[in-house]
Amino acid sequence: MLEDRITIDLEISHGRPVIKGTRVPVEIVLGSLAGGMEINEVADEYGLEREDVLAAIGYAARIVASEEICAYA
Image 1: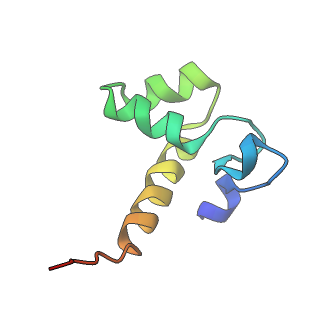
Image 2: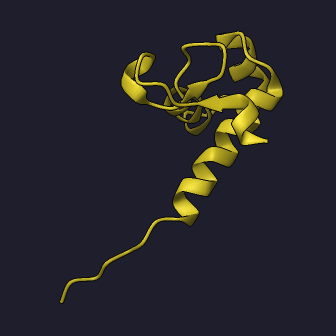
């Protein structure tokens, strides 16, 4: 579950989502993956578990799925 791995706390990283129990922002994890790193490489680089990295991907998917696109004519 994402709630077990991702947290948002105004006292940590200015309220940005981070991997629970760390100060590693979800955006850093996603950026590392987008930059070509493998899941296990990202986990090793930031001292995370593979499941933490997968939770970050799941979190991003949930955010994108809830986006509303407004087209202006």
